[in-house]
Length: 257
Ligand SMILES: NC(=O)c1ccc[n+]([C@@H]2O[C@H](COP(=O)([O-])OP(=O)(O)OC[C@H]3O[C@@H](n4cnc5c(N)ncnc54)[C@H](OP(=O)(O)O)[C@@H]3O)[C@@H](O)[C@H]2O)c1
Figure (cartoon, rainbow, N blue to C red):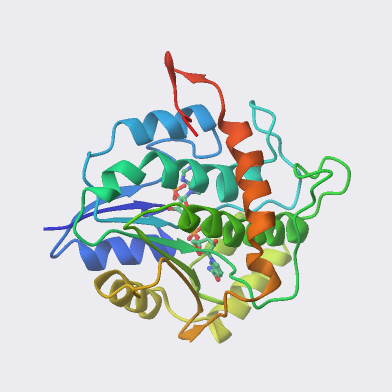
């Protein structure tokens, strides 16, 4: 029986995947009641309590905000949950994943192939010019790069970036009106269902591609030769995000480089 950890597994796409996998796998579905993943300290503590052998890690937690919200640790909220928590979970759980026979990380994000979005190197916390779109798209580009950095280190873990495109998951419920109603209507008409999306994700977990890193927009593979996957930018961002995670947690150093 596989052990599958799903960050963001309490609702939406992650919730549908958890419900589907529970028949055959041991599923650990994590939501905000388990830990606030915008907090580096709580994310690190959560990771420390997870099993020491994990077959699959699904990174699906996210929440987007029209207004800039700063966490008590001084990070912009979108960056904290979409970038830092995913980096921290992947790195902290790497040893547990390496103990599994066919380990995989599945990261639900907006993979490369979309022109929009860049890393704001001079202001990654968007303290000067915040918008939900800038924060979300920066997060998408950051996940592409952090996956490149993860896969650059020797590992048995297969890292899969997956953009589900529009899904009728209910994610719009956190938005203000009228955007909530408009987004909800668009997702209902044009979005894939969470069950269809979960079926595709389950297939990827069962049969991850052989390459250390792959990226998909729904069924379509995305070329890793694109500028969004630049190895130099990946190394730079990896060092930057490690810096945000560098510090003592409950008496221990949780990032060891
Ligand atoms: N839906 C789409 O159209 C779409 C398109 C492209 C990419 N994506 C990607 O898919 C991911 C999942 O989207 P979704 O539509 O399934 O979202 P969703 O329905 O809003 O679910 C979000 C999940 O994240 C968890 N979460 C949110 N804030 C958290 C926090 N501070 N700490 C811990 N957990 C937290 C939620 O847990 P609680 O319920 O317990 O708070 C929930 O399980 C997103 O992150 C996004 O990157 C989605």
